[in-house]
Image 1 (cartoon, rainbow, N blue to C red):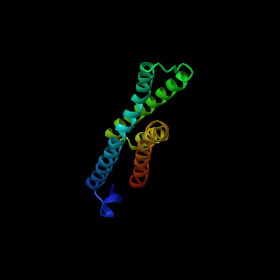
Image 2: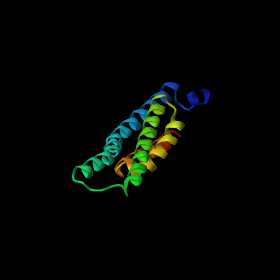
Image 3: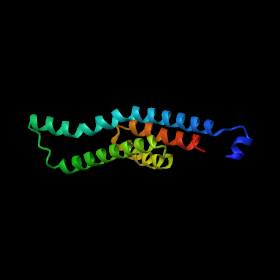
Image 4: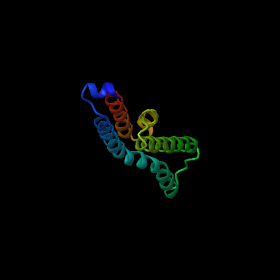
Length: 128
């Protein structure tokens, strides 16, 4: 701390920078959340519509179920990252956002994954 004061950076300044980073990353992850949620309801809607128009999906059902499970897992990991962020645990949030971002490229309608991966780069750049 003495070293920070010597260079003109107070502990209040560091806390303000951390809070600004958390707010920025939280807002970006909030923008990605609707894409993850929308994608998690696509599979049930496809199954519902296919049953209504009498299309047989039994061959595709295991693939659809696997996709839905991965979509839900990625959304849960995204929520875990957001929770870690609120606790100012940047390292845990970074790890969770990396996993959620990579899974989100597949299950977050791509744009959700890109937004979450952008948050990880923001954490990495500004948390030095």
